[in-house]
Image (cartoon, rainbow, N blue to C red; front, side, top):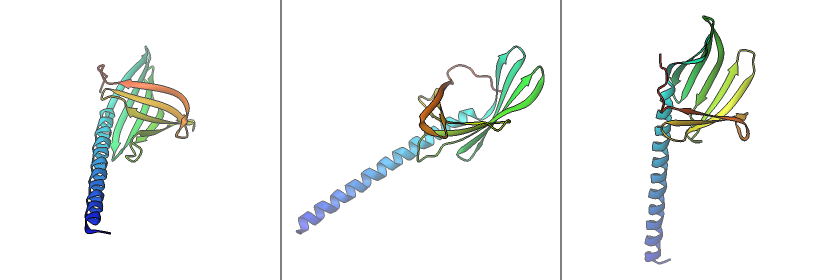
Length: 147
């Protein structure tokens, strides 16, 4: 192999190395931005479901994970309805959630921010994206009630 070919291969290899590092840096920045969007859920939220039914959502962040306790207030009496734990595994680039009710039943979901204002959720069986059982969108472009 001539010196010219060795230099050319070395330059090509270094070029590929820089490209792959740039792609990883973009993915890391993108994942950080998506994780920061998830911080919009942190806090206490209230949703009036009916005249005598109010839903309270208490969200807190735990590293790259979020813990959410959901309570129902029915005729003034507050009780735990369900718990929603979710995280953002950066290698997958989507949020994954596990919901459990007080009776022991559960549901899983996969979600992502479609835009900065819209979070899309796909309810699935055991985190299998091909087993969709329903969908939901949360829009931040309307004024939510934050307590």
